[in-house]
Image 1 (cartoon, rainbow, N blue to C red):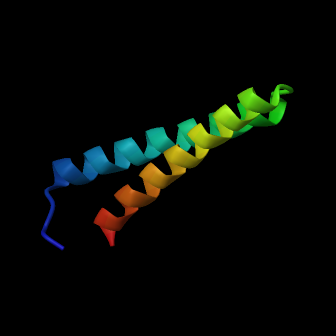
Image 2 (cartoon, one colour; image 1 turned 180 degrees about the vertical axis):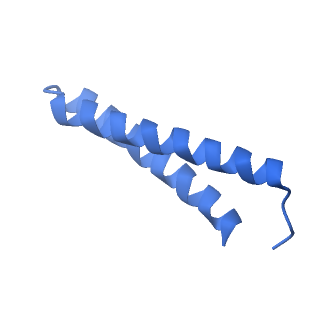
Length: 61
């Protein structure tokens, strides 16, 4: 892995925090949804946010 600057590290951590927050909110919205299509929409969004967070985690390994 190439070295990343402190600014890049801070940006990655900031993005990861945003994805984590988005994941939690969308999971909560999905749990409250009664319409199956709406529930699926929020679940897919939550999974996408977690996938993005995990992709960013790879830069820190």
